[in-house]
Amino acid sequence: MIMNIDQHWSLEMRRKSILVGLVLTSAPIALTSQTTGAPDPIIEKIRAIGMDSSSTERLAHQLFDSIGPRLTGTPDAKRGNDWLVRTYKSWGIDAKNEQYGTWRGWRRGYSHIDLVYPRVRSLEGTMLGYSPGTGKKDLTATTIILPRFADSTEFVKWLPGARGKFVLVAAPQPTCRPTEDWQQNATPESKARMDSMRAAVRAEWGSRNVRGTGYSLAIGTGELGLRLEQAGVAAVITSRPKDAWGTIEIFETYNLKAPAIALSCEDYGLVYRLTENGQRPRIMMNLDAQLLGEQPSFNTVAMIRGSEKPDEYVVLSAHFDSWDGSSGATDNGTGTLTMMEAMRILEKVYSRPKRTIIVGHWTGEEEGEVGSKAFTEDHPEVIKGLQALFNQDNGTGRIQRLGGGGLPNAAEHISHWLTRIPAEFTSKIEFRGVSFPAGGGSDDFSFACYGTPAIGLSSLSWNYFNYTWHTNRDTYDKIVFDDLKWNATLTAMLAYLASEDPTMITRERVDLAAVAAAAPQAPPTTAGRGGRGQPTKWPDCVKAPRKTEPRLK
Image (cartoon, rainbow, N blue to C red; front, side, top):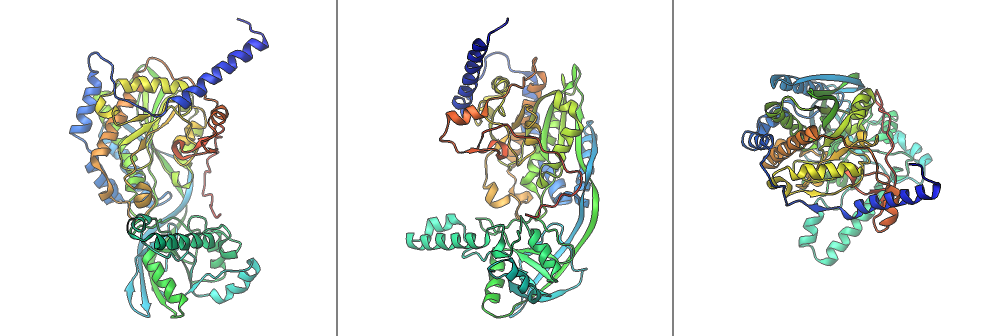
């Protein structure tokens, strides 16, 4: 059929208006009704194995208690990769480690940090990731506070006086009580004063130009740490407390000589006040660490080969790396175990899938989705034949939301799959319809930017962002195993249904600009973790760095 320009324009505008309507009217949708007919025997078997004979507790003990955190480039990350391969092979699933590049290597040992004057106290703290150590020797020095400078020239003049000292570079928190505690217990006047004090601290210390130095701390010590190291400081002391009891974020440094440590909110405040009041506190550190240079970095990939359509793929996705202030249990160990357990279940009840089922355990996610980006570049055949990718990366809670990732046809397929899943699962899920593509912050972005069906499995919080995300408290005991086995079972069902689906999901994209224009009350963004925010354009793919790429700002 040949159309003139006016006819084509009219049809195109009608098509766009329909797609915009799908996005604006289909989310969230509570799923309660199921199709009638005989139950699917494979679904019933998946449910029985996943809920009644889960292996998640055993796997969690092995991964979090025995292997521990999995910082990219470290021996522990490689031990974890090898454990994944052995485990999958013991289940009869083909698995391998795929090197995608190198990353700076580092071995974490112990961190002993003590206040030795004006009184003796062991301090709660640890090295930042990739920090140099002290050669297993005691390093003792007085502390000095990074002052406020009029400009970077004044900072340079100050630097010689910091030589040989431990420099405090983080904000002194006016309280270590979480906001929730102040809301519940403080008088309105007291709460208002504390809010004002906190705001002032953020304004003073929160800029990329830290206190007028002209340098940034990035997420650890950044370029400011390198400049202080160049000036001969003995160590850098920081603190990034969460709005919660006893939790701090543990990130990274690029220092090569001067150690960088993070102290708890309470102990950082203690040292800061002693320093501020002229009591010349002394701290002794004994830190065991080893910088290893560039080391091979790997994704672990396991596969159940498709029997009818081996060149079409269902991908289970979860990053395997973690920050190493604790065990990396909920970020993203629980996502890892969800996908492992789903594969174990599928091998038992669905060992000859129609489409190839792959699980990708990516490293380098915390450095910017490095491993998953590299996989998409190295495996264009998977991008071309991708039926659906399911990614989980926000804690231990049960999956409660999913959507079509900005693809209307994906939403149609998912909606149908959900009618095949028992109500005990779907009644707890909000189906978000067409939704939006992932814009960054987790590995579904690496696939969504190509316009593929990349589906984020968003979980219930369980105070994830305040208590376990990137913190010193992300440990085995924070896992909710009832939710974890529920997630693995649901994921196995979704993978089975995506594999069995007689048709492929098409790649037609929703018009994000039109959606944003039709919903001006939603603040537009160009990116968002797992679909947070409302993007105005499709995300652009970003090339994976194949060696360490410093993040100093």
